[in-house]
Length: 200
Image (cartoon, rainbow, N blue to C red):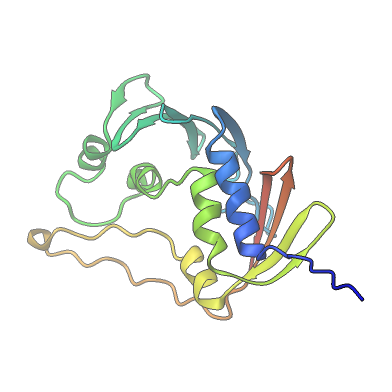
């Protein structure tokens, strides 16, 4: 009699390994598209965001806001933003220009807020892997759900805190209930090639 032993990798480990394979590549590019059921774009607009990152090098991507395009170049902790007028600025400088008195949120602060919260696709998937539930193997990768707490966190938009001296109060945060997020991950040649999320 003989015994056959088959090892099955933990799905979360498999996803993390595939994200690491993406991160360890010399470079990769991506396109992010956001849309919602109402036909309008999601937070920050539905226009595609195109990006490219080099291992231990530069990351470049664009942000579209209200018919305006901003180019972002980042390396390590340093980031520069090119405005629609063609001038280069830092995140701090853009925040100050958008709200010189530090009185709270303004639409022009959306771009620096998105820059501060940016994660590369590989980093985003690696962080997400630990929050996945009900992971199922598919022919091309995995499907899963985020926990309700993680889904609620993902839908909570970054908020700017008003300066104490301004005497202004930040608008109340929206009350998110029954948050759900499904995730579809496509893996090819050991690396992640597509991430699709659906939030309700």
